[in-house]
Length: 158
Length: 368
Image 1 (tube, rainbow over the protein chains, first blue to last red):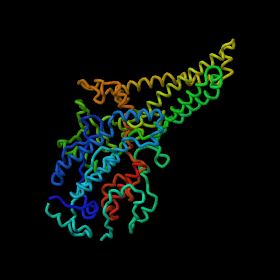
Image 2: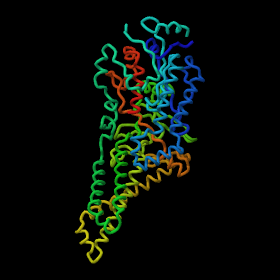
Image 3: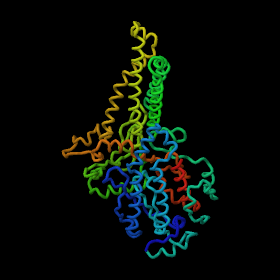
Image 4: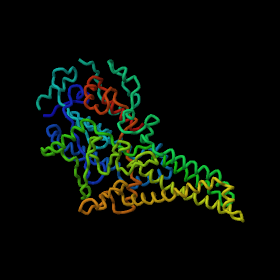
């Protein structure tokens, strides 16, 4: 059904970018970073709804954790104020730590779930935290690609 | 047709400095070896960057030099002319307190001026096209252009999001486009000429700290100078003689007198804004005061608790800068706006290490 690619390299070699789908922000809870879990129609034949929703929900949870106003953020804020904010030069803020976790998670999801289906998620931070950009790749066909031809063999049944 | 090496991505290998790939044989050799440009060099807004992108200010620095000059001059005069007398006659804590306040004021001012206020990067060409398509799809065929607003419901309150023609995106809530800097800024408060930068989500707490500490400093200097002149004029000398003995104090008195009212007023105003989780922009426009429209509009961002609002505004985690000014541009000639279209052919032409390269750049730029 879906185009099979074994890893991201094969994706790049033998696929061409068909379209990009943008998952927009969900502002119902205010300005916190949260993305809509509505399943876009363009991905209907490419990935299971549950996998997609899981990815978006996990990302939303990560962002909620990053922006959580609680004990640790008060402590960070007060410490920063007491040191006249100089501490930001030495210390990595909690937000930055969570962003690293997010980028690792996205990389992992791309490797395991999205690349085999010919999709690629771009980290929202590269798009100003406004959208999750999902690039949809179409198999270019067996003519013309020198390597990765093993991937094209399973592609025609779509 | 293309001579590409095959190499599996190693997730653990990402982000390590010595994983930098050797440039592939081909036309890109010169590009990768040549100095790679950073994103701040092609930034579309009207900002100026220093220290290789670490420091940024608005194009018109406004009166920041004046602000700095006044503060530094008045404080120096205070330390040189008034402190010796006061240490002798009152207490030696005075220069210590004054010094601490002065340091705090200067640091907050520099943090406010040189930080990214929360600029939103402009939409990529693909995103802009996608948004345009959405607008066109939802509009009925008429001779008028479709209205460029989007309504969202935030905490049971209807909020209209406007489309920004410069940045080609629907502005998130509380975001406004600053015409002086030509950028959309998140949680836009105002563009402050005194600090020479916009005040937005990422530097509001520094701005608040600056004006509060400045009002303390001004009041402190004012009080100390008054005490100084009073003590000097005791013992039958009179005020005129005291001023003649210490003319610098008169200058400090004038500067502090005229500035303390406005700065105290501004601090009070911003304390009110912080406590009600409002921005200057929203307050001036009367977005939530019920002036616009018939419905009962309430601020949907407020937690309805002064303490919670203060914590949310001042103690919330500091979001990262979204413009990634020290990140490297992908090694190609086209500007970032046209990047997505050109990206894929370039990836196909380069070696397999491109995705790793891009990911590594991102990882490096996060830590850099």
